[in-house]
Length: 133
Image (cartoon, rainbow, N blue to C red; front, side):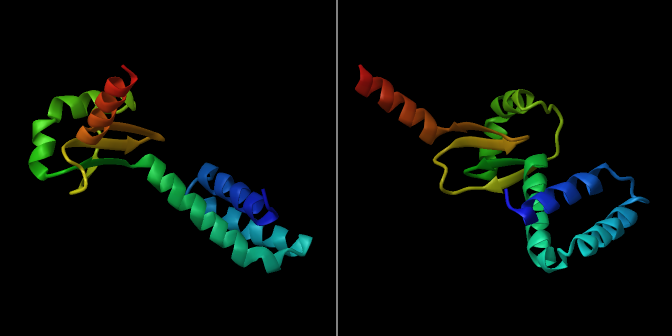
């Protein structure tokens, strides 16, 4: 891990742990620390790494359902509800994406997990079973 990555990770943890009132103070203290250590020149790279961490965390916290068509979501409702339970959500606000590349079924991503209920995956598993004998 590079020095800018370490600084970004520490800043991210500190900001996340701080209350809304404390966040500005945490950031101010961070800038003072950089100046004391003579690392203000790293600020651009630190902020770039910090932004990556924010995007990564945002992606981890949202739940995305990819389906072939809008009707596909209605057809697979039971399977989707079971998949939501597997990732630890029952009534989550799910962001639905239409993915024409899917033949059918769905792919659910969230909380660092990916549940592939697509026809493509099922067909690959069937092919593997057939080939292996």
